[in-house]
Length: 59
Image (cartoon, rainbow, N blue to C red; front, side, top):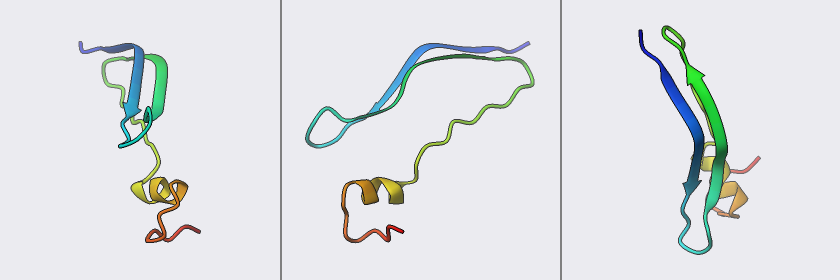
């Protein structure tokens, strides 16, 4: 039997200036045998829209 356990997981994406963007903070979960889990975040397009990139099509 397989089992994956995550405790106090944090993921921060660095930026060239500033402290970066924390996408996940302090998450904990257990994935049991025969379970499937996906964590989905924003697309790169939406990231560029938030930063004001004029090349991105932000609608």
